[in-house]
Image 1 (cartoon, rainbow, N blue to C red):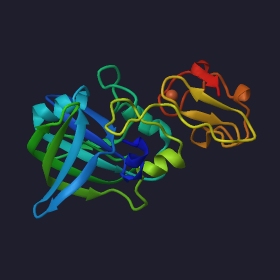
Image 2: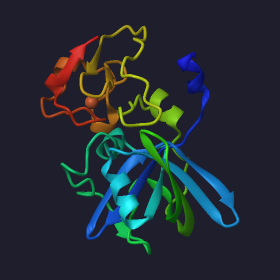
Image 3: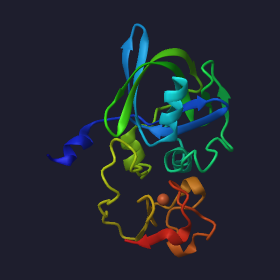
Image 4: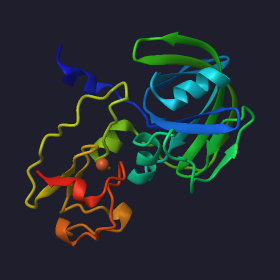
Length: 228
Ligand code: FE
């Protein structure tokens, strides 16, 4: 099998949220499709080890936040590279509670969809949930983030728990200036591009970045980076 064949698949990028009792959680996901329109239904694949999977199995509801192309990496990292078991992912995130009790994220979101689970299938490492859509709302206009845009333009990376993870080794691009890679998540800081989302201008040498700066994807400290 040639693993590169899978790279031709296209995806969006979403935050999937759910609830369990008085607790809420959410995570980034790209494995989502609309499967029917009458009635409207969605299918999502969620890793069995993730807290969101546990919450969806418990409450049988989930909500989808369709992210804007302008979503900063640290927002995606907050939901993709941290676990709700260790941190409150909704700290400093604007959201409201939907009719299903699942949180509906308002930041960086174009529209939200709420669903009640009608079927679930164990597919090994992941569970495939099918849900009938029971509520929708457009939050703002804009272009949706695609998985390709996240990787190629935003230079985002993929957690190991994702269905499409294929290793953190990134091909080194030929650039005039050196680059530094996060040893935790694989994000690469390229000096010629900087990190404008975090206020680091293009052309800023890695040594000149303040020590308070953290990896925009996973939040790792600056000393977790190595030159590549
Ligand atoms: Fe990182």
